[in-house]
View 1: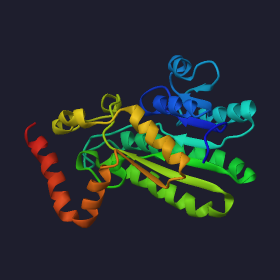
View 2 (view 1 turned 30 degrees about the vertical axis):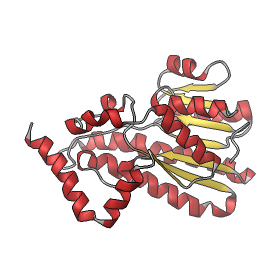
View 3 (view 1 turned 135 degrees about the vertical axis):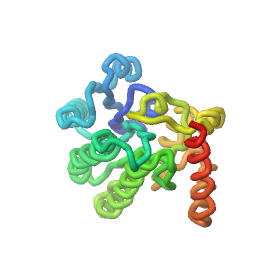
View 4 (view 1 turned 180 degrees about the horizontal axis):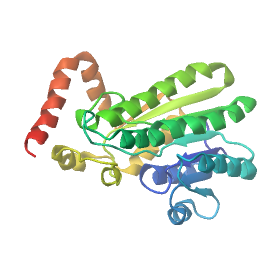
Length: 261
């Protein structure tokens, strides 16, 4: 899809991957509508030209307002980027059900609700693209991230199902599966802590700008799946080919860290 002139609605747009996406889409000539909690940060990121909706995207009124403002300003929505998300490191066997529901509200139900608001409009004009930002944890379950992984598997499945449902309507879908990205994601989790070994691996993480560039390039080539950095496909492939071996290695990382605490 050619991005120049397209209207792009981005959630979680005030920082991290979302803010980097704003700049990447802007450079390609997109018209922007941005959603996040912080109005001040949105104004800084979006500049004078963007439509801004400050609020909690898990709330219906925030979603309704964002879509209505976008259509009022631009008359269309061409690309929806469901980027907002949150993590939960607590083990699944003891995690709070309330906190797990809270994570699902942001990671899965908010994207689904926005899709349900936007798709009817896209079907009318028989064009559009839904971009769901998942995770490599949505391709292979990580034991320190079990419940988070379930939300990203669900989002990936939704993306695939939508593609088939909307095949005759001219609407495309893409799931993005980042690995470790240098953002404040780790400090904003609902509960729990990642293994220290992961934190030590931060030097190998990609930047939000690199992730955003992979996303916009994926949109331009009508990709179904974007895994970034690209070498993460190797881990996914190894897990599919040798599931028991990779599971054992991941469990060793997890239990080694747990035993040390």
